[in-house]
Image 1 (cartoon, rainbow, N blue to C red):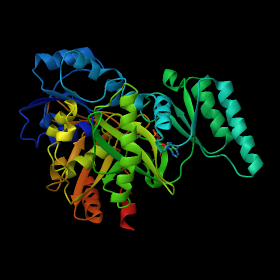
Image 2: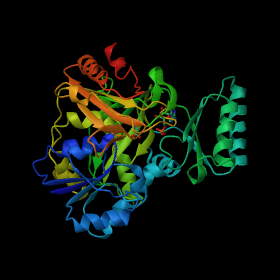
Image 3: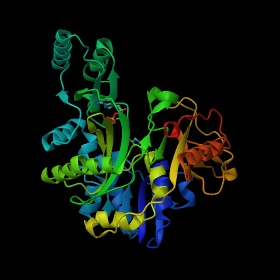
Image 4: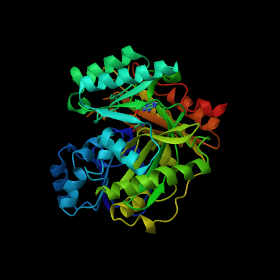
Amino acid sequence: MRVLVIGSGAREHALCWALRHSSQLSALYCAPGNGGIAALAECVALNPLDTAICADWAARNAIDLTIVGPEDPLANGIVDAFQARGLAIFGPTAAAARIESSKAWAKQLMTQAGVPTARAERFDDHTTALAYLEQREQAVLAHGKGCYPLVIKADGLVAGKGVVIAHDGQEARAALRGFLQEHTLGEAGATILIEDFLQGVELSLFTLTDGSHVLPLAPACDYKRVYDGDKGPNTGGMGAYSPPRFATHALLEEIERRILRPTVAALAQAGAPFRGLLYAGLMITQDGPYVLEYNARFGDPETQVVLPRLRSDLLALCDAVAHGRLDEAPALEWSNEVTCGVVLASAGYPGSYEKGLPITGLDTLDDGVLAFHAGTRLEADGRLVTSGGRVLTVVASGATMAEARAKAYANVERIHFDGAHWRTDIAARELT
Ligand code: AMP
Ligand code: GLY
């Protein structure tokens, strides 16, 4: 099969790496790709948001299957554009991708389907939102306990910048003002949710689905904050590991039964059957699992730790999903080894950062250690330089998490670029 991957991050590098293991693969392209992906796939200079141009290119180049990484092209209707031309593509239509691109729509869908998720109210007007906040504050005053923290979420896609955990009335009011009066996030923040805060431990669970069948992948934990101990601002993700010990067979079964299956059924019933990868961001609370958010695509950096453990043929699975015959796919096989992935980021990330800094040391990594590239660029003279905030995800596997983790960090230390920073506590909780 001739395959095109859409995207340019470490997630897409991991997808290309896994697809390369398929006996069915005859040619691999990636649009636009990056400095690391170039070693596995032919990089094509297409803008994933130009969905019609991508579809034209795929038709002209006899692509048998396209696999979409990021959310923006999905929300932009890349799947619709390909399907209109009769091209096979892995990913949801824009209508189904609303489960990620509109948090208000997703919340309504989950609530109607009885899927456990935090209670939330939707607002698009500052005065009404403020009145609701005051009502919440008054109600709990009467009970003698506070209503904070509360979570204030922008409805639309803003690359992880749309969630504010407000610890008091001042922070909550500042968030409402920012989203609804000052329009700091533009249209994406013109509708908001005020949501109850959930306490627990976070889990990422991906499931393949063809719109009716579900096939969950191995669970993973993601670290979203920039600094150790979950301090500092949110990022795209600073590291991940798979599988977490607390994700027992019984818990995963409960998530499939109470959350994944009802959500997939509700999407189909809403006239937006979901084909592709549905990513549940979950909070495991004392009362069981709750959905924090859904994403309509593979997670980054979870993909970088999940795919190296997959022994089944990723291409065959994606093809089965794209053609609506996931029920014919064999049971998934997983390695017994566990994985730990650490993200190396540019100085300043998630704020502004410099680009074009030389990266060295990648040729000194241990056998079997994977370095998935995100913000890297290969210069004409063959030098690899930084070109983004998150630069690399270094992934090691081992018989135990202690071993995988030690190996990942030993290899991270061998990679250099000016100002490189990373969290030192990825998977640390698994050691205690
Ligand atoms: P989201 O983009 O909705 O996943 O939110 C980003 C992060 O905010 C999540 O990974 C959680 O750490 C946190 N978060 C979101 N919603 C809640 C909630 N209802 N309770 C507690 N934390 C939340
Ligand atoms: N790991 C978070 C995300 O992919 O959105």
